[in-house]
Length: 196
Image 1 (tube, one colour):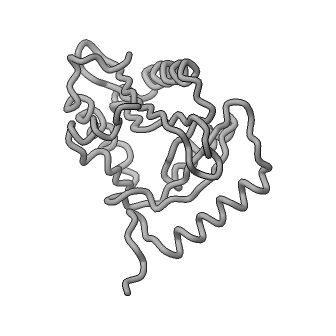
Image 2: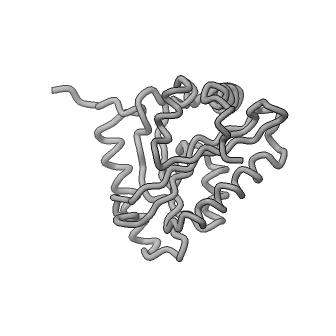
């Protein structure tokens, strides 16, 4: 369901923290969202964001985020983008239908909002998620040093709702170019490599 007012942002943040603590941290990834306060998490959604929650009684056991914006990158210029973000499922609820139900609800909103592109970011090492997304038509379009506090590089993946307008060769070139630039200039967590 769309987060009701009676569910606090601190409850949503607690789910984020516990989900990442048990899963991503165990793999060596530090997700910066797990360090946010409830207020910081709320602010990250902005006015064009939607937070979906799965509840067990009144406990938040799953979270999916959706932020809608007009794109400015080469793959999204002038297009309405649905940015899928902040997914978290408590470890004891992973492998249940919680993730799929939240995903179905978010996809329903994507359609209702008339988004043209679905975009998300994942750790470069998260090969399982990347492979699943590729099977569903997503393309890896950009390399990223992630955000401050993170200890890994990320990749941006995109799926065009009405089909990809670019050749695989062009997309691959643009991805490799971004990877070269990012790795040359930045360490993970947007730490600049060179000091003048």
